[in-house]
Image: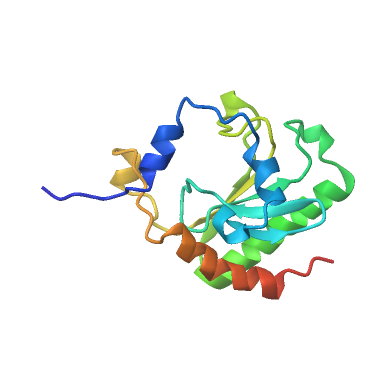
Length: 166
């Protein structure tokens, strides 16, 4: 019998059904440990952070500092900067990982699949031709080929180099 080790998944499994009293999207940017918190980029109104439980290598999120679940509250400068950072993220991921495409979107509310429903955020997921296989379709398991720390270290220099948003 062959085994697939994904020991990092246990951290996720243990969090299921247990809600943290605070919002991680509010707490993490207040700390000065960006690598540990997987924060790749900080803007004036939002930041980019790697998803700790990614669908694919390089899966990140663009998150406003404003704590809201209401899309209509993300207007003006916040909305502009969020989409600028999404654009920056796709440029960075294209340069670093050469994906064939992207899924970009939001899950608003638990019924829509939001894992952190109280704080709106945009997912940016790089995709490659053939990146779905029986493990995801039948086994409901995603195989990721790179550790999150390695992914962070691969992407962070691009955010530094390309990070000027006008």
